[in-house]
Image (cartoon, rainbow, N blue to C red; front, side):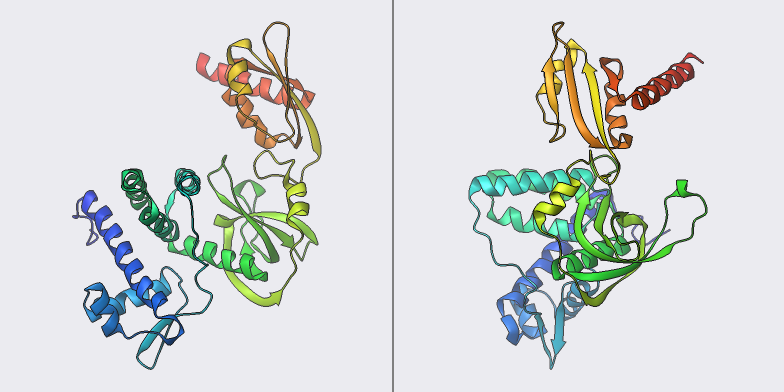
Length: 337
């Protein structure tokens, strides 16, 4: 039995949050002292901790949170450029950031100390009445499993993206790709994109070995390292245009016109949202809704269509209509047994 198994769940969560708050306190002192650094004794005095705890937290900032902390001549500090300039947000802007971060917490299935730290900082600038939702979000995040190797990969990819440095890694093929062995890839990171469908994070970048833009699931990346080689990223407008046809993440499939007919009972609900930037809708004489969009293939939209059950009918393409019909038939046969 692990040492923490006898600790009640509530105490474990509270302990995680207390530790995060402690690390943030140390980080604030380091940041406040700039390039000259500060001694652990002074940090202990400023934070009300013991020097032993301060040394332990400095190590955690370096190894776990991957903060570029330095120590030299008895003084500690943070490398220049480690922090972005302070943002002066209006209440409405802070709420927009909170909602975006809240959506992120619903998508991730791991404990991310960086996201938790961002939430804690956001809480400091929100009015007291809004602290409750932030506290609940931090509690939810603290209950999730910790995957330090994954968090390090995300941090390294974020750094390589920001610094425009080529990364080298082994990529493990998906299980349905058979017995293919992992392959080394040299990639120029252009974008990190979360998937609403798979609850996973993807790297979109230029694969130098294949001379093409490719998508990589971060969970399948192994042995990642940043190379000293730099690259120039394409213009944001060009990248956005390339990714626009994707329903979710897959963007490099042939452009396909998808036409659906939604029953009158759900037509108003479908109309309430823009499901894809290329969508066109038209109300039919019987109250049904005709929905059309030009997508990169049909693999990803298939799950969305199936989620509407009998309230939607695929009109085109014929291959998608046959696929959805066959899946409904197999489901019906399974339930009939």
